[in-house]
Length: 78
Image 1 (tube, one colour):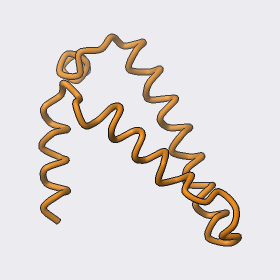
Image 2 (tube, rainbow, N blue to C red):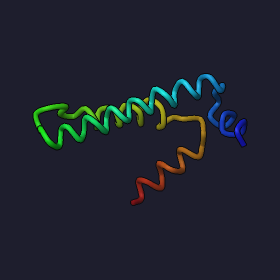
Image 3 (cartoon, one colour):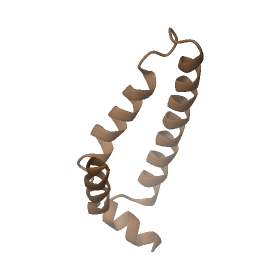
Image 4 (cartoon, rainbow, N blue to C red):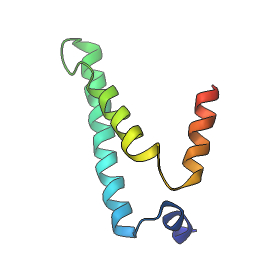
């Protein structure tokens, strides 16, 4: 199961962990920025959406793991 995910994603364990850690911290930053922006609208304007859009376009949209493509299709139908 562990190797299956890495194989589908066409990455090594170290590539995977690097991406997961960096993406996780970026998403935490986006969440905190969004909360602060909600309180003070002049701060972090557009920060959270820019991070989400960047992750989507640069990592998920053309990801080799077909399961992500299916998730994207399902999300578009909602």
